[in-house]
Length: 203
Image (cartoon, rainbow, N blue to C red; front, side):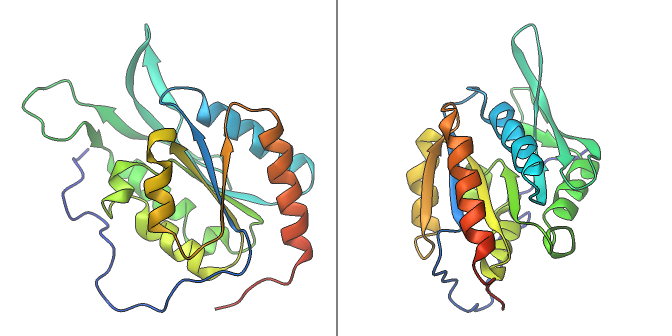
């Protein structure tokens, strides 16, 4: 296992084409910390698959004991492979809040790769947080997914970070849905129906 260094998966400094989308292809699945965002998005995945949609991406369920957060696992939604992703640091000398496992990082990058998501209608990224806002962890994956135009992208985001995420992806039409609201699942399904009837963008 290893701690994610300051430059891990930082966004490339090479000049890229502007990432502009004409459709509402970005959803922020928001809620307070430890409010059940991952649980509710797992229900969305089940519902979307029941409707015949292809769902890919990454879930990161929390691991708790006696009410205390211990860490997170990573689950590849295409093949249900599961690996440990992160362990909470209890050592006060550690500067990072979590130590990350190479196996989980590898699984996450594979789950969010172009190969794994190329036929997906919906791609889940659980979650997009402070590390991603700092240009690390899954940030480069998300940038690539949005630039590809191949699927509806749903980011699981803490409520207090939602506006910062919107500012990062200001070029993309974005919809904010409350994870705890049951009708949010129906709204995403409706978006998928509309999106899948539209011609797909190509790069």
